[in-house]
Image (cartoon, rainbow, N blue to C red; front, side):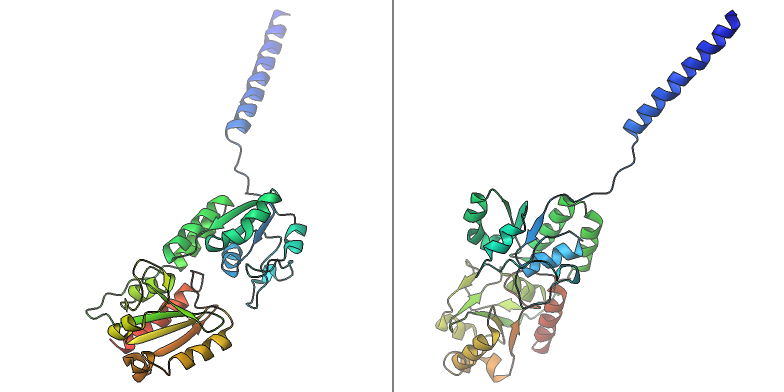
Length: 289
C-alpha cells in the first residue's frame, strides 16, 4: 500500500514539475509575434506616401496629387495638400496619426491639435535626413528589414574631381518669381556630391532671392531650373527672365547647359527618386568637366 502511495506521489510530483516547466517555457520563450499595425495613419505628401509604400505601412488616406500614387493606396480617400487641405476627408478617415513634412507642419498643427489627433513632422529637407526618417519609420512600424533594404538601395557615392564645375540652382514659383538654392539644400547637396560647386546663392540660407551681381560674378557653367509647381507657367517665366541680363550673358546659357527639371524626379526636398536625380546631375557635370 505504501509503495502504491509512493508511486502516486512520484507521478503527481512529476506532473506538477512538467506543468510548471511548460508554463515557464511559454512565458520566457514564447515565439515573437509579427508586428501588427493598429494605428490609423495618414500621409500628406507624395514623398512620405512613397516611403510608406516601400515599408508596407497601411494607410487610411493619402494626399491629393497629379503624381501617380503607389498601387496599394490608389483607392484611398484623398485629403488634399498643404495648399488646399481637405479637412472633411481627413477627419472622416479618423486617423490616430497624421504625417506631414516638417516644412509644412504649421499648415496642419492647430487644427489637428484641436481635434486631438497626433501630428508627426518628418524631416525630408536633405538626403541624410530622409535616410534617418526611413530608419525611424521602419522602427516605428516594425519594418526594420524593409527600411534597411530601402536605405541600401538609396546609397549614392560622392564623386571626387580635380575641377568643380560651377552650378546655379534656381527654384521657380508660380507668378514668375524664383529663388536661388545653396549647397545645403537637397539639390545643392546632390550637385556637390557629383563634384560640382554651387554658386550664386547665400551660403547661410537654403533659399534666397537671386542677386544679379553675385550670379554674374560667379558666371555658372551649369544652370538647373526647378519648377516647384505649375511647371508650364514657371518654365515660361524662366525663359523670359533668361533673355535679359545677367542670365543671357552666362557661360551656361551660351554653351546650352541650362536644364529645366520638375517633379517627381526633381524636388526642393528629398524623395525616393534621389538615384535618378543624382545620375542626371552627374551626367550634366561630366559634360563640362
